[in-house]
Length: 248
Image (cartoon, rainbow, N blue to C red; front, side):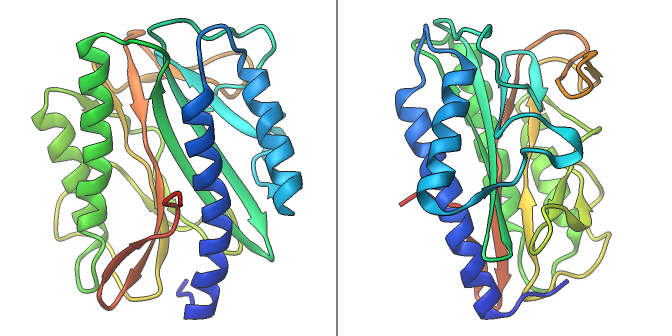
């Protein structure tokens, strides 16, 4: 599903809204705040920027953000009863739709001081995302991205979650193709200019297997060990990958 330059620029607008909110939340998230407070800020942010929250109501999802703490991998639901604590790892995933196009990105932030193990996990997960982005070039294969992510994460002694994947994005939140965070290089569709995709490694200190809570959304590591999550929406261009969701 190839995008024109004009469509990519519309997606850049949506993704800037996303990236700038995530940057803002990373700067203010602190021990004692609730994840519902962060969600309230996101609701107001969407209203002020004329954007529609992409997650709210998606397959029945009840909030604007996904806020996943420590062993929670993705899709944690913000709650007034969920209070951030010193030393937590908090993954924040956010998406919007504006002018018919979507933006999607995620970060993991440290709440106060975290231990060296948690800090290294965050660093390696972010690096894994960038390794995948480096492979998002015309002429490469889809699984070149997947393989680069997997090799960097596993090379650091971690595992990559296999139950959730990156995805194409555009006039829908999820478009083909699915983009696993593991795979054999040289496989999958040939990458072309105009493809836009959301790459999102989820990396765990322990095993990659996950469970989903009774709320039907919150996914957490089966061994209850730490997980981190980073995501960017990128466009493939003739001159290389263009990260649309960078904050100003």
